[in-house]
Amino acid sequence: MRRITRGIALLLAFVLIAVACGSTDDTAETSSDTPTESADDVVDDSPDDQADDADAPDDEVDTPEDEDEMASELAADLDVFWFKVNLVEKWQVITDEFTSLNPGVTIETETVGGDQAWLPLLKSKFAAGEGPDIYMVEGAAQADAFAGLMTDLSDEPWVARAIPSAVDGLTIDGVVRGMPLNLEGYGYIYNKTIFEEAGVTERPKTISELRAAAEKIAAAGYVPFSTGYGIWWVSGNHLLNMPFAYQDDPDAFLASAKAREVKFADDPLFAATKELADLTLEYGEDDPLTSNRDSQQLMFLDETAAMFQQGNWREIEIIEANPDMEYGLLPMPLGDDPVAGDRLPIGVPFYLIINEESTDAEKDAAKVFLNWLVSSDYGKNALVESLGFIPAYPDIEAGQLGGISDDIIEYSAAGKIVPWVFGQFPDGAPLEMSESFQKYVAGVNDWETTLSEFDQTWDRLSEG
Image 1 (cartoon, rainbow, N blue to C red):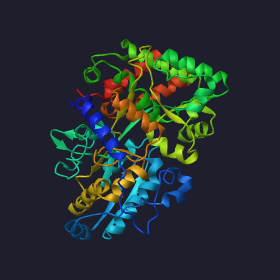
Image 2: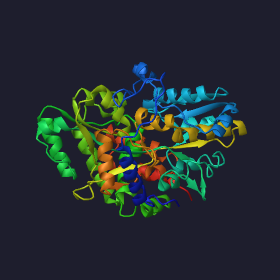
Image 3: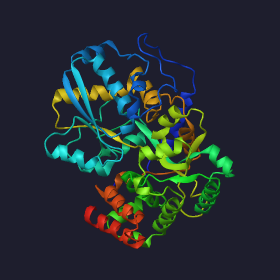
């Protein structure tokens, strides 16, 4: 079994190194015919504002002559399966840059994600013999569904540069199968101005403190929470990660859960998760099951809602819409222990995989493209300035950070993190668990029935 917590201290150390490097004044040379993007220029991920995405990162690719010769010989049509819907236009600019440098290569990206469940569609593509050349998974459990369809990347040059624990997350039987790009953290994004106006002067670290904050915010005339419970992964991945991540030994608990040696109703952290969910429902919008990424964005940006459950992948749109907003990221506390409750979930959000069934020419081109993403000046700049990533490569400068990323770095520096366990849930479990949770939100099932459905899901999907 792959240990979730292995290398967590090393990961934190490398994050701090990357941020320290990002504070230097060194800048790369810029192309005279490519507009320079400042942090304020590259912040919009809305599909309605594609014009802003036309500004590509400003650095030319600096490749040795032998790499230029190799690139000139590339000839392949690559299909990419991408689920970061908030970054689709910016990703397109990046792939266009690569193909302009490699005219023998085309890259077509299909984007499915956001409120949609992307994993069933990806599986269906492989079942139909139409698997993409490059695709994404969130972790090892999902990758197990694509056994035999993942190219060995162990000898790629980026492997030695990446945070070791990030690479470990998709190293199977000693073979590197996926490429990490970045680190992410999530929790409750909060408006500091609203908190101050409502008289909330300290970060809530317990469920009682979070309730007291919600009461004050509601009394000040704001909606405390925009829940996002119409988005399957907000509950199925992120909320339901918490009772696993808060365990004293998440690896051991996950192993017991997969072996079906525990019942979720017997674990007090699942009761604590109910208490947290109930609080957000009590102080959330009127119809939480219609709350999606667009409505969350609207309620937060127009300052109707004080908090919404998301992560630093939403930072770009906040900065673009309101660069003067004061905001940050709060933990999702389970119970009233102020030490345990003052931790953020931080991890690798996805891995890029090359399809083993692609042709040799396609695999060669895909490998060159992935390495270019994290080794060329253009690619490195695009990761931090355009995509807004905290890079999984300590030699890539972290760039200018916003309030969410600042808090992720602060919590990382203090070692106050919990792991992302959901990437090792049984394949298909997060989606099914989200459906059960949504029935609870709708009042169709009580919590006891909800936990029973969780157990049934794990009974059916767990190994052995």
